[in-house]
Structure formats: structure tokens, C-alpha cells
Image (tube, rainbow, N blue to C red; front, side):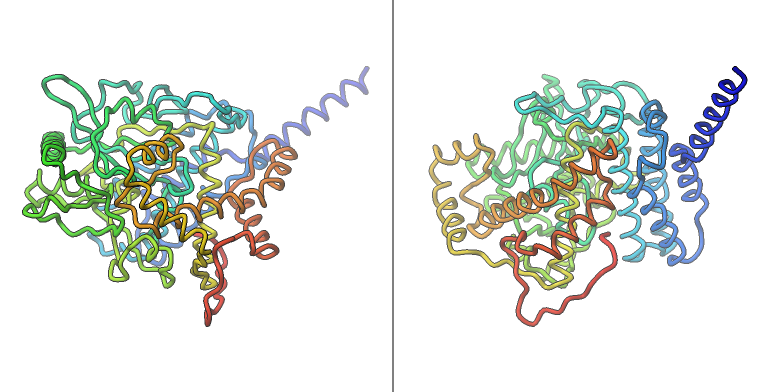
Length: 495
């Protein structure tokens, strides 16, 4: 009996020792937040600290933690990470005024924000045992549930009445195009689209004003947008809510007037941030971001420039940008994710929504395109478009002038429109096929990892699988070839 009792004691002690060796994620996030609050000194030192926090957030491995404890603390962790992002937003203006916002400083800052979103998703996925949306299953309406789906600034439930005129909604679609758009600038993001809310003061109807690639600038019921299965959304509200109300009113009036004149605003693939000429509205084109920046510029009479920080767009290899009709002279632009870094004195993140059953797929797409664009930049890869895809692009472009074909394409989630250049259409198709090819190559190893470990592969493992695939089977990149005279310039990591 004594021997059995001693054996039990030793077993329990051993289990306790193992448990004590596990890391405490909540404490680590709190330590990172304290570090960010206390940072001072030269930009290089701060960049290094940011890099450390980024690496920690990106490379959290459930093997180092008590998974049961992670599940129990999921909502707490979600709110801790949201608080960390808000802490960064609280200090952006100060860092800017101190002259600390160098290109590298900003890159590390944005990387840290992005990694915090990934970790939020990952912990929420763990809490749900990594379930995915079943085929045909209806997507959850955005902001319709509490944590871990939705976290709010005040901790209260989010409902439809909470939306106000001038609110900005950041979102991320589920297509390969969305993943590539989120990485179109030098700074990667988890968002690919932005829109502005308008609330009719008489009817109280709520609408979303947005510029879509295949439709141009449109006004849709807000409810429709919230049910459109975006896997990630953030609700950003101006501190000056009267300014936001005016911005939405002005925007709504301009767009409705364009409809009445039969001259709707089209989508602008060039990502130009030139201010629209009020005397040439009949030919106006806008990307989704200009909808927000222009309306706020008009409402503030030029006193508020949105965003606070523009994204740089200056890769050595501009092949992808050129295919999207983006000029070589365009070195910076307003990318959707820039709104995620708005200082707290100007805008506040009121609520964040994620669908944990779908975010793992989004993250994998992000990581795939991180690597594809890194390889293009590093190894001088350019698009090699087969004749068949040139023909497909041209045929789709001209066919899109026929209303019936355009509606059929929309029903099949193939966005085409008369204003879309053939090269853009074929590029979108090639991106999707490359993504599918690379995903197919790494999926067996990712499934094997999840079966062995009990959770999906974290980003560092996925990056390693992608590099191995590229090294062993570069033909997975069906439409990319090394340009003549290109020199390989190996980088250590994906940032």
C-alpha cells in the first residue's frame, strides 16, 4: 500500500513539474505590453524590441503551453491581444513626433500588429478544436456573437444598432486575390478591403459605401455585407463622430448622384491617391481606400488626411504591380490595412470580428503569398503568361460587356467587369491557380503535423514547408520564371 501511495505521489509530482515548465501566454502578452509602454531610445533599439515581440507573437507553439489552460483563457487572451494593439495605436503619434518612424521602425511595427491578429485567430481556433466550416454551411454574421468571435472596446455585446455614420469597416475576403491585395505594398496586412458606413437619419436604414473590383463604387445594405462571409472584420470609429457623420453624408450624396447621372464611379486599379477633380466626376475611378480618404477629406475641408500612415509600394521587382496597372511612379498608397494603425486620438477600434472556423485557411493563404512575393523579389521571378491565359483574359474582358455573362460570372464568384483590363483578369486567374498548386503540395505535411500534434502548424512550420516545396519543386509556381539576368538574393526570413 505504501509503495502504491509513493508511486502516486511521484507521478503527481512529475505531472506538476511538467505543468510548471509550461509557458504562461497571458503573462507573456502582459510582459510584451509593459515593454511597449516603457520603450525609449534610438530607433534601432526600438526596432529590435519590436522584432522580438513580433517573433514571439508569430511563433507561439501550443506544445510549449498547457492547451487546456489556453482554452480556458481564450477570451481573456483575445482581449489582452486587442489591448496590446490599442496600446500601439495610443503611441503612434508620439513615435512619429519624436522622429522614430523610420521605414524599418514602421515595418517592425506593422509586423507586430499583423502577428497579434494571427495569434488571436490561432487561440480562438484552439478553443474550438480547429473545426472548419462545412461545405454549404452558412457563415456566421459578422459581430453577431461574443468572444472569441467578437471583442469590443467596452466589453459589451455588439449589435446592429451600434453602427454609426462614418464608421469604417476593415475586412478580409476569402479569395486568393484578397490575400495578394493584402500584400500588395511593402507592408503585409491581414485586411484586403475597407468601406464606410452610412446611416439614413430619417429611415435609420444602414448602408455600406464601398468600391469593388468588379462593380466599382456601390451602396449596399449593411446587413448584406455583414452576412457576406468575410472571415475577419474590424469596426473603426472616428473620435469626432460629427465629422464621420458628415463624411458619410457627403459620400452617399456623391455616389447617389453618380447613379442618377448614369456615370457610376468605377474601380481604379492604379491605386492612385490623387484627389478627385470635382469637375471631372463623370470619369472618376477609385480603389476602395479612396472612398474613405476622399469623403473624410471633403468633410474636414482638407484638415484630416486619412490614413495617418501611408503604405510604401517600392519593391525592386514590380512585375505584379505592373500587371495590375499600377504605375512605376507610384511609390506609396493607402492600403486597407493602414486604417489598422490609426492613432487613438483620431479613430478607435470599437470591435473586432473573426470566424475561427475559417481564419486558419486565410492565414495559410497569407503565408503562401508572403513566400510567393518574397521569391519574386529575392530571385527575380516574373510572370510567364501562356497564350491560353491571354486569350482567357481578353475573352472574359469583352464578354463582360454582356449583362447575362457578367451576372453568371458573379453567381460563380468570378468577378469580371467591362472596366477590368484583360491582363488583370488573367493575373487573378493565375494567382488562384498558383495558390491552389502550392497549397496542394504542402497540405499532406500540414495534415500530418496536425494529426501528430493535435493542432494546426504554426506560421514558422508553414514557412519552412513552403521553402522546402519551392526548393524541391519550383514548378509549383506555374506562371513564374526567373527573368534573364536576375540574381538570387537569399533572405533569412519572411517578414
